[in-house]
Image (cartoon, rainbow, N blue to C red):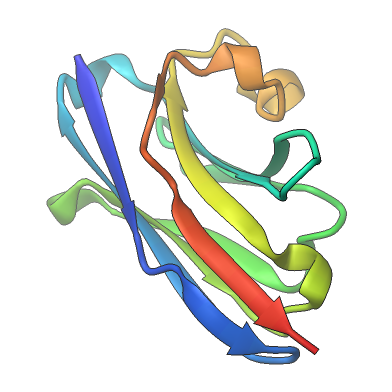
Amino acid sequence: QVHLVESGGGSVQSGGSLTLSCTASGNTASTNCMAWFRQAPGKEREAVAALYVTIGRSYYADSAKGRFTVSQDKAKYTMTLQMNNLRPEDAGRYYCGGGDLVQPASHWAVMSQYTTWGQGTQVTVSS
């Protein structure tokens, strides 16, 4: 199946930028949507952004709109999350998920839609 590995996490100050990457291997043809979720200590995992790779359409949580950008490098089978103007509330462990969604536009933020996950990468933001 598909194997996902995240990288790029780190520590930044408020207003800084960070770029996360998720590299896929295995049967990538069976995955039509890739997403970024994050989880802070004591809080539920929440959707941040997603990419409907079949058509190149991206989706964003309200908290990420205008600050985050998701893109892909097809040659490297990598999905990238560019995060700008980071805030303390953006801190958490970021996970990459992959799945074969029936309706990505309306279900991209539903965690159960994704069948495979990476190990996550930690992001901290200081004020």
